[in-house]
Length: 225
Figure 1: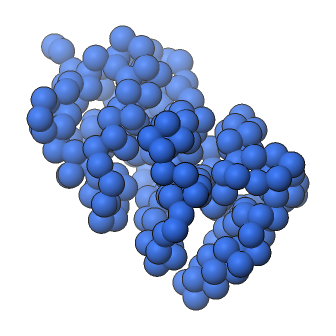
Figure 2: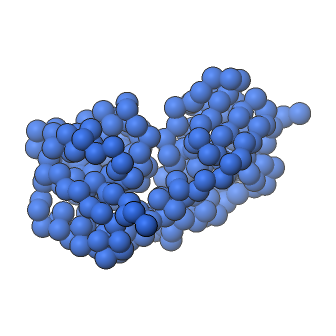
């Protein structure tokens, strides 16, 4: 079986080696880039990269700008790494299309677990279409259309919407959403979900009203009949 290819981008060679060694142990193929410019070159050269682990603070081109450019060309999952733990940094990461956000220092085992979870979910080849309230979800093609118009959703936004629709009419706690959509034991707070829901609602326009807030608990997807 062909190994999945991961692009690891960090200007610290020690950090790249740490991440690379853990990924190789899990049978991934690893490509390294030492700065933002190198990352974009590798991204365009390699057409079969499955996921990118991207540091924020780098020379030449920073991680934010690398993420923005990649998002203009691809929906490939991106995990952002940063030494900063400020809320504004995390929100910016999600705002430009990052799928995960991990602050340094971090456990390599947790990072690898998140990589595996993302790839496991993105690799689901379910030939299934879902239609509800003017929303069409193509799970195989990873596409969403609202009233016939395609939405540009990030990987996590797509997974979140799919989970909501699959559980329509059911009140879902934030903990349950994290465990299912993020698919690992999450030790952060609800800000991650709330940020993604806010972005998802905005992209869905009027249909964003289908995602109801259950105060003090979580969310429920409900289509008015």
